[in-house]
Length: 350
Image 1 (cartoon, rainbow, N blue to C red):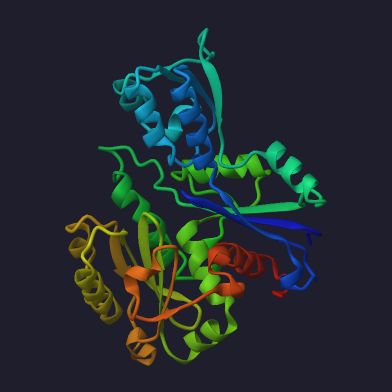
Image 2 (image 1 turned 30 degrees about the vertical axis):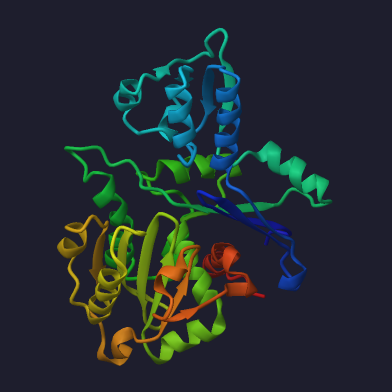
């Protein structure tokens, strides 16, 4: 059993962090809400834009939350080059990256300033934790949103391909919560794979999966799911993912883009989803990722209780109970990773 654990939920705005010491009271474990790595990259790019300096991106695949700053950098007349490994942070298709006027090269061109890309930098974390008087953790578990790489025509494309993650959960694992934490990142999930290599191959998860586990970290919600079905909705900055849960088992998943639907249409979708009447085509035809459910038992009683979390949860105010797992909604994913690890390791939860 690890003596210390670093649990990270890496978003587009923030990275939310729990430094967990097994056996300690949760209230005494350090917690941080820090700017997301992509936001820090964007700040560097913006500074180089002001100075009129061309940049060379190197490192690894990561979240693309800095892309707007990169676009403005090029519009200002500054050049961008990228290492082949780091190019995946821009797009999985190298030809697409080149079509934007970005050169893909192995070495930093003369006169360019290097900018490192990474969702997780072990050296940075050693320094940060060291300044806080904390030792580097024995285990790092991280979550991030990953569309994955699903090339066409052989593949599904990224929108449908991402939903395959949830199809596998329902079909291959029959909704087993322990399958939400990956000992090895699924092959198409190139961002999660890059994070996993950087952390020393600790478990990884999708951010929406971590949020669901965070809701079920709360004993009252987990217990209620054994009495009747519950709906858990994570309203993220870019994606909204809803889960039907009965007896701590996922029976349905719905995923759409946050803000793409009018509120009335979104609420209607969730009503139909609870009933098992919403189809995959209905969701995809409105620009969403998809919808799937296993047979819904009568004992689940329509999944009436709704528990809502996520940074844009205000979109569903009045449609259920807002929750704060572990007493802090921002760290819901971290507490979810802790629950996920307990399911695969047998570690007792605090």
